[in-house]
Length: 293
Picture 1 (cartoon, rainbow, N blue to C red):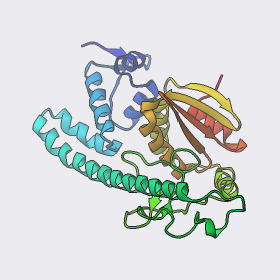
Picture 2 (cartoon, one colour; picture 1 turned 135 degrees about the vertical axis):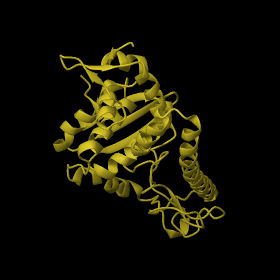
Picture 3 (tube, helix red, strand yellow; picture 1 turned 180 degrees about the vertical axis):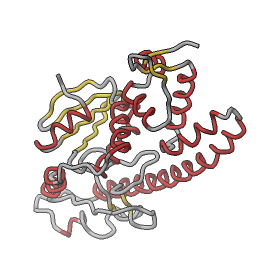
Picture 4 (cartoon, helix red, strand yellow; picture 1 turned 120 degrees about the vertical axis):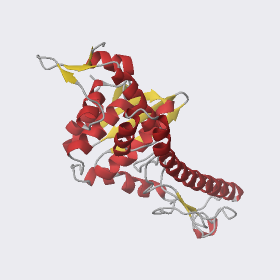
């Protein structure tokens, strides 16, 4: 049977070596050892990694994937089908809820935009008579209530993730933690929001396997990124089709490491991810996302 070292398996499978090591520590992938201590893998490892990758694409957690791999190893396709179907059904239900929420939020934004466009331009200061902050502004789709979704310090929900801090719409749609949009004087409010990451403690609530898993997931997600320095952090440029995974990880990262500031900008075929951290967290930022050197 053909044997491969970890670098060869990484090249064959497209899975980074750091992720392969983590999979081994998580019990998803096994390796033999040479007398010199090098990991050696058989051809079956390529099929196993393809199966794991397909399961991850469906939004399954690693614990679930581990259970599913055990069923897959037994070799009965019907058993894999029976185990997998309820898991996919659960993910589909979650995705449909998120899609409905996003559709309601989109309608709310359209209503708010139409309301703003209908208001007369005034030379004086903005006051309640303008209707910007009046209850029901943007009527027809509910009052606008949201948190910055893609750009700014707030997290962005993605497949398989919870939606704390996500955009919210009053008027019937189920939302979490609504925060009213402040249109004027919005710069001060936005500045206060953006400063939260600066005063957050430089500490991560993840440890052990959770920390290793998150690190491996980030390194896989940003593999091949072009890096450039920005004030207090760096910018990674990636293909735009990675937006869902990047947004999901950024949302999860802020749950455990609130001292990171994430900003996502879409530019045609490119996705620009800016990550910042306070001075005390710069070493952690480099460990997780690399450097510009």
